[in-house]
Image (cartoon, rainbow, N blue to C red; front, side):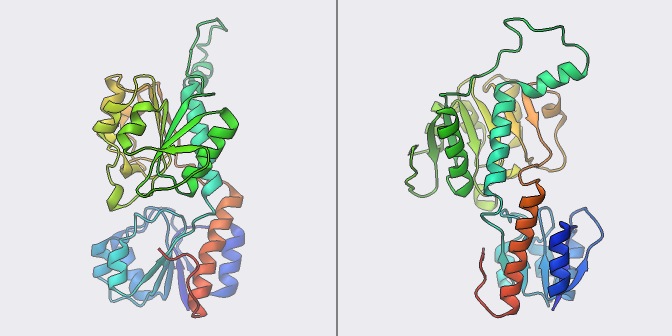
Length: 314
């Protein structure tokens, strides 16, 4: 079977893929356009896409697909219109589990950097403007013992909760679409209730149409003025304009972001603010994790070829 891999993957993944399938490796690092998607669906039996590839309803509907499986590289799949794919008889899989710890680690990185003003401090030193230590310089938020609110208590949300509770003695509250029992954490009735009590509010919910702009002006207005907001989920989960307004108006104390609504475009309003930490979507950026993600995607492909149940169907 012919397999298209949409972006360069770690060496071990490429080696295994070539040993197992008839592989075409796309030689670009930019996302696939809608036109490329339609052509690929018509030309390959299987595709291994990833973040940003434009598997929109229009691109999928325009195809007379030869492809029968999209084995997504990544847990998030909001770049794929799953309903449109299913309507064309195309299955979709993802790579849950492989990304959990790495993404939770980035959440903690952003929490600490934002709370302790680490980005601002590094810029001060690099610019040669640091005049030396003094008792009231760059006072930040002490994370230990604070209340952390988590929006979305799936694998990643639970991993963040464990790190905050056991590592920093934080109280954990959360909002989730369904009832869930999580040791050491309390589920509240609404997102607004979580926002009201949290010193740190973390978005860890999946992306997609159901969660687009889930976090907007109503959530930010409910937060405390010293509280910080962290997003490691998907950029369009947040109404970015509302976040900018909340930061500019002093409704919240700061933000740490790894994802953006119009990624890779980051508004100047965010880059101009000192109380915002901005990372270039580093959530799973380690060789071990990216290799594990690739191997999981290949497992889905191999199961499909063998006529077995898909390990990770969406």
